[in-house]
Amino acid sequence: LLLTAASLLLAGPARAELTPQQNADVERINTYLNALTNLSGRFLQISPDGMLAEGAFYLARPGRARFDYDDEDLIVVARGQQLLIKEGNFVTNELPLDGTPLKVLLGRDVDLAKDARIVAIDARAGTLSATIQDPEAPELGQVTLVFTGPTLQLQRWIVTDAQGLRTTISLTQVDNPERIDPELFRLESGNSSFRGRQD
Image (cartoon, rainbow, N blue to C red; front, side, top):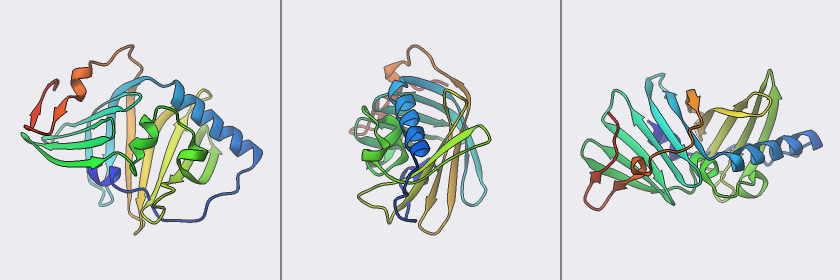
C-alpha cells in the first residue's frame, strides 16, 4: 500500500560525496520541483510481494496530494503537514507528512542538499535519479526519485525499507493541468466525512 511506501525512508550508506556534475543535477531537480505546481494522472504501485495496485493521482504544490485506488476503497490525502488514510467511510490513519517521500515532493522551497541526506545521484539512459534519506532518521530507509527527459519529468519513486523491501510508485498519463479542484483534498478526520471524490 501507499501507506507502507509513505511511512518509510530508509537506512543505507553514508552521505555521498558529489561531483560538480552531480551537484548541477541536484540543482536541476530542485529547479524542476520548485517550478512544479499541478500534476495529475495515473499511478501503478508494485508492493514488495509483487502485488499491483492502480489508481488516479493529483498533486497540487505546495502541500497537497491525493491517491485514489481503483480496486480498493482506499484514498490517501496529503494536506499541509498531514497524511490521511481513508478506508471505506472512515479515516483509519493520520500521519505526519515529515519523513515520507511526499514531504520532499510537496515542499514549498525544495533544496535536496538541505532537506534530505543525499545518498546517490545517478544519470543514465535518459533518466536522472536521486536517492535520499530523512536526515533526522536515516535508519528508517531511503527513497529514490526518478526523472526522465531533458527538462525533467517525475516518472516514479522507489521506497526501500531497512530490510531491503522495495515499493515502487510509477506515474503514467501525466498531465500538468492549470487548476486542480481544491475539494479533492478535503478529507475531514474529525467526522470521517469526505468531499470531492470523483467516481
